[in-house]
Length: 391
Length: 111
Image (cartoon, rainbow over all chains, first blue to last red; front, side, top):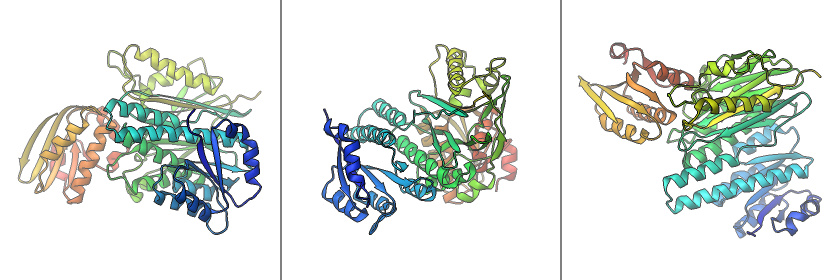
């Protein structure tokens, strides 16, 4: 059994401490977590300076003396390899966005759902474990292949798997990594008005620097999505964050959509990425128009926003939205032919998918069948959002 | 990485050939960097011989464009194969890097 993960909980609410100790007692007794507590940001910083074994900071935002956002901006000066998760009031998207932009790894909302909190903590420490392995190995100058394996693990650790499924709609997604090339990821996040953002992205390189860039991209995109509420605005903001410090000109192509379950409305925008595909109720499919964006991270704000558009349409009951990377459209068979968008558009003819899982799985099956023995040359990612047919 | 080069009164025309992906993008970068001189008055990259470029290769072009932008040296690419042109269009990099249809057009218009 390894050392317990050390978690510093920062909240001015005195009730939280006994609640955490009670609800997490099994994990504490089992030696999985160990909790420390601080009443505000200043106290937290003092503890962190005195104790460099803290792995995770779980912090409220509104606190006396030093609030959570200020604490976040101070964490980087500590030079400790830790991650922060923010606890915020439900709907306080402005603060959550600021927190994500200041490097928070994730967030949970109040009132705290302890099951949700535990999933978030588990995911964060798993990511941290992969990340430390990556940086430790880099220090040891491992071979390139090892570095790529580690980067792949870091990539896997940021992918969510608790897919949304309601009576109205569902999401399912998968990413199959290739060796050596690419760096795909997908993500989704709900906002308080019940809309659901879904994102698919493709980072320009692989290896440890690309994995770091992937982390920044994921955080910036998530923060921007919940803060702005608009795919176009979110891409502009994420580009601003990523472009600010990117001397090696890494970039990430992104397709971002937001779905309104109350009326089926979808708004999407894309940055250097293939536009989405909609599968109609009869199994026919069409590719939606491109939105003119430049891949994130390399264009100055003015240039980036100049030609970027977003498009809104209604996803009818029984229809499916597909977001995917070029690992799907450019998959090659042994004859060096491409899978191609046309093949994707004809895939569901006469056989419209009844669920997100069915649509996503069909895409992967078709690509694998097409590619045959040819090794995948790029990561393959597909996210499906299915609006359930009326019961 | 094969790379032909021709200088004509300050215009540096570089013509790489082959396929650029993650496996040779570092060589591609090195070859381009070596082919560009500080006193070039403008640089045109004739991509007619490139039949495939991956995102790692695109990043090299951005780095070259950044270096030349730093010295205010005009830079353009030309003669993109259809598949390479599509990559430029989808990535949006045709908004960052000037693209001409042919080498003659690039020579006549790049300033």
